Length: 183
Figure 1 (cartoon, one colour):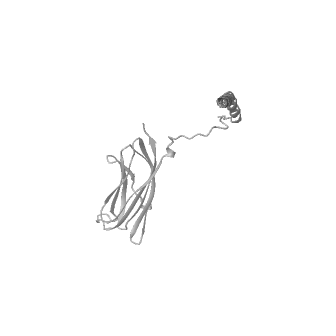
Figure 2: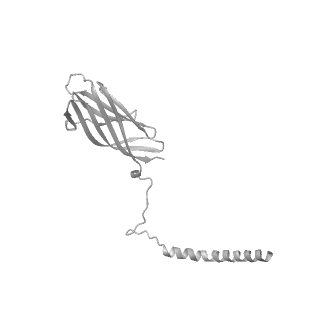
Figure 3: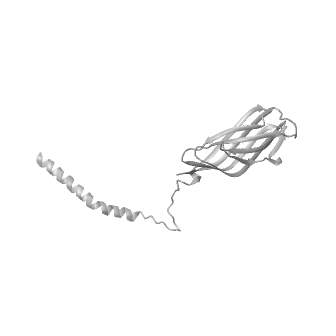
């Protein structure tokens, strides 16, 4: 029995020794079969994980009310720690009484206001007692970690000197941008 155990141990030691001696040669054979060349004509593909295109941000801020108010504030997102939000463009879609006009749309971080747009006549269409707005504006607004994005929408009477009339107001502000990593 002792002789069988000794023989098995010897066989196991020889197999281990042969594998240990053959491993570098096997690695060389595999390396010869797999060649990676990084040339201008044939570059090795890679991914930049810090590329802002991989951190898009899209969200909506909105309100719906029956109101004669001339000001609406809507709250968006809080910029997470370690990030900076770069707002690339903002789209505004609104439905207000036809006696009202949207006079300004601002975005704010709670301390600083950034005027996005003073809507133009071409941004407004009237039908069935309502005025609809739709426009998109390119912008570059930066929010730091911890900032809370807010949207501020101002309405006024379409007839100068007349008070705002009560009616249904639906306002949506769509924000498109990206995060940048901050150290």
